[in-house]
Length: 300
Image (cartoon, rainbow, N blue to C red):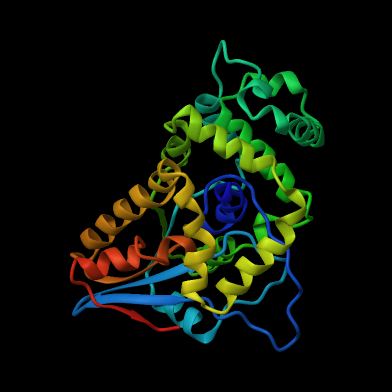
């Protein structure tokens, strides 16, 4: 199913709490990415909307003058969720609280039998006993397995956009907020039906050899500010799973649009940095704001 490919690509662009990575050809000395950046404003409020790529190759350059200017002018940064790098046990505790249940069938019985050898290979790569996965809810097992797959590519989430943005704001003594708590973000998966969780798990272990090519194409769209390409790569594949699309895109985009509308009632300038997939396509935050009558200007 196409959604299996999307699941691997999309986590890096939609910013779910799972660890994901990407691989691509290195930049040349003169290359600097120019990802899309927008602003919605009224006489006393400006909100910069930056579509991010959560996990990037090490030393990937994307901080253009336009982005740096937006960072300098913004009094506060808002990201999707704040993962406490100094205390990762907090996120692990939430995953443990939501992601395990008693009396579950063996994980291998929850997927297409044809994929069981791939599941066994993926579990072995984690170094975690197979019986541990049988205690996991299907979505939580998918999180764990896809994170291990991407980690095997040799790249770290610390190279993504959000850590650099957070560092800039922290250094300047400016506050950082979140649009979702860790629990709320994980809850989108926890509330999926079992068939949708199964699609998620099967996507986590399928076609690993294509990952590098797919991520390179996705990163190319993001780095060039190709919003149409972003929408095609990140969002279109979800047509195969309306439930996943609604959970990961539709409801979250609607929630954030309402948040931005409420924030527009307060004076000041802030930056909202969310995965690029949320700002591209017909159901994006950008399109929702425009439908509500806001003028959204693209500045990069």
